[in-house]
Image 1 (cartoon, rainbow over the protein chains, first blue to last red):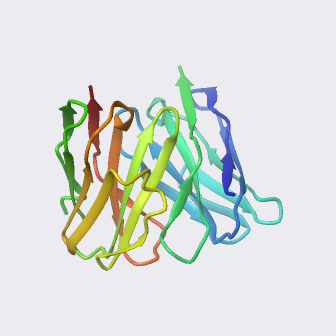
Image 2 (image 1 turned 60 degrees about the horizontal axis):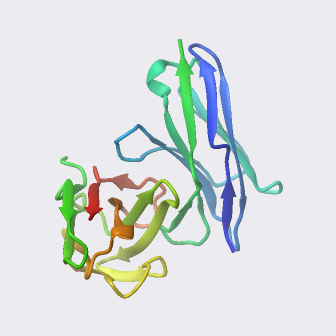
Length: 110
Length: 113
C-alpha cells in the first residue's frame, strides 16, 4: 500500500522557523511535493524534490532523503499569513498522479 | 489567465438526485485531475485524464460516480444517485504533461441532505 505521515498540527510564533516532516511508504517513488491550502481555499503548489537535498524558494525550503523515505518543509521568518494547512504529496509513478498526506495545520501566533 | 474554472461553487441537493460538477482546465494543459476533500479522508484523487483519456480511475468510490472529458477544455464529474456521504469539496486540477505543479480550481462544495 501507500501511506504518508505528517503531524496533524504545528504551532509557532511570528518570525520563528518551523519544520513540517513527512514520511512516506510507496511502491514506487518519483518525488515529493508540497502544497499550501488556506482555510476555504484551494491547494497551491509550493515546491518539489525529485533528488536528495534541499531546495530553497524564498522563505520556504524543502528537503528530501530518499534513503530514509523522509522529507520536510521548512518555513522561515514566519508571518501570520503562513497560517494554513500544508500537504506533502508523493508521485509514485512516472505519471501526474499524486498521493497526498492528511495535511498539517500550521497556526502562527503573534 | 483565468485559472481552472469550476461550477457550481456550491451545490445543495437531496439524497437520490443527480449531481453534475463541471471543470474547465487551463488552456494548453493536457492533464486533468478530480479530487475530493473531506475532514475524515483528506484529499483523495478520484480520476485523472491525459489528453482527454482516463488514465487512472482507481479512486472513483463506486459506480455512482462517473467522469467524462469530451474535449480538452471541459470535464464533468457526475454522481447519480447522490448520498449524504458524498458531501465534500470537489476540486479539479490541471497541469501540463508530467510537470510537478498542479493548478487547482476553487472547488465545488457539495452538500447532500
